[in-house]
Image 1 (cartoon, helix red, strand yellow):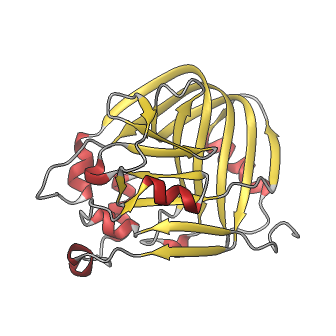
Image 2 (image 1 turned 30 degrees about the vertical axis):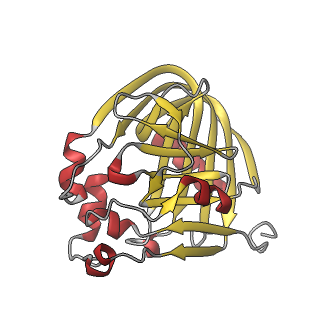
Length: 239
């Protein structure tokens, strides 16, 4: 329990509900974002790919399943980052499905009422990802934009799954539940995780007690519909 009582901030740029409403242009650059954390995920202006940040390096995961280092002057409309400090570390049992690993992680945490940065490093039997495709203005809402997502399968691959386990009460602010991205150990490919099977690996959790939320100062954000009645359904469809 002492690991939870140490204050640890998580920084977030904009809202998931703003992204759902088609607010895809960001005021924040990757260079500025990295000043708030060395670990995290998000997306890029125009939904131009998925983002994963590991050890202070921001990687851009594109619709063809490939990865490349993101430019520091690239923009982001949504991202969540922290300085990753593994408060909890455990070797996972071998040959786990995503659901089985989720149950194992539940056994490691003291409370579901905090945020957790999650890193899983190891060998995967398979990983299924999808990646958002760059959108053009006028931007469609995210439920429409993600219909064209490219799905990529990785078989017998070593790599890292990185992201956040977020309490249900944060729905609309972030993605409730587990939101994770994958990048292989060669940093050559990855995407937003749909499913996986872990052959063997290490689970690390960083407890987040403080949420630092940065809202966009744009006309588009001020007009955005941030509390639609079908918010839960929209998040379930896009994630």
